[in-house]
Every structure is written in C-alpha cells, then in structure tokens.
Length: 169
Image (tube, rainbow, N blue to C red; front, side, top):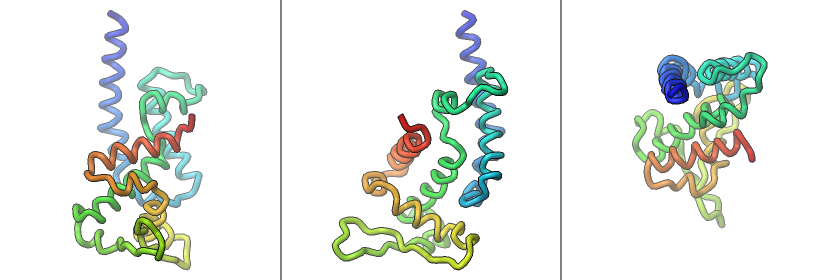
C-alpha cells in the first residue's frame, strides 16, 4: 500500500515539474543552442534538482541514471529536439511561412537524399541562428528519421535517437 502511495506521489510530482519547470526550460530553448557550457550546466542543474525532488535523491547522488529512469532528455538534447521538430514542421508545411522560408533543400549530385542548405556565418552568434543550426542538426539526422511520415512518428523516433545519444548503453 505504501509503495502505491509513493508511486502516486512521484507521478504527481512529475506532472508538477512538467507544468512548472519544463515549461520554463523548454520555452524558447532554441536560443540556448551554442550557449556557453556554463549556461547549459546551470540549466542541467535545474533539471537535476527536479529529478532529485521527484525521486527523493540525496544532493550529491549522481543524477544521470535517474534521468534515464524517468526517460527525460538532458538539456542539450531537449534543445536539439525543439529545433529539429520546428525544422520538420517547416519542411512539411506545418510551420508558419516565415520559418518555412528559412530552410531550403539542396541535392548534391549522387546523393540519395537531399540535405538542407547550410549557411556560413562570420560570427559565433550567426552560427547559433535558426537558419544555421537547423540545417546542421537536420543534416546529421539519420535518413529514416528525416523521412518520418507524421509529426507523431518523427517525435517518437527523434526522442529515441536523442535518448540513445544522451545515455549510450
């Protein structure tokens, strides 16, 4: 009986964390692409504290395995997920025109699948812009994910891909 109560409490805490913390972490998180490692570390620290709160972990206990148990992507992968999801929607006509206009396919001769046109920037800030990072991340994705037939399938495959990247076995 006590295990059922603890599990229910953990589920409620998870919902609370999703509503209050992840909504803030994920809001405009694409602007964190290419941010300093210090900034990413601070954001990861927030996610780690949320994990510790839900699972009742001690302060110094490593959180990585527990993030995996909760099936949460780390902050860097959450950022990539968001950028790639917007890119998928832009390429499939589901995003607003002003975003869709930023991503264009080009096909190298002899290449099986088209890639996104990359933009070279003269500054590190330019490399962080959506037009640059979207192409870079998209072109690195396996073709099977890029050619997903629906948003739901794309999200599932992408999360699995990023989860494996975040927590290699």
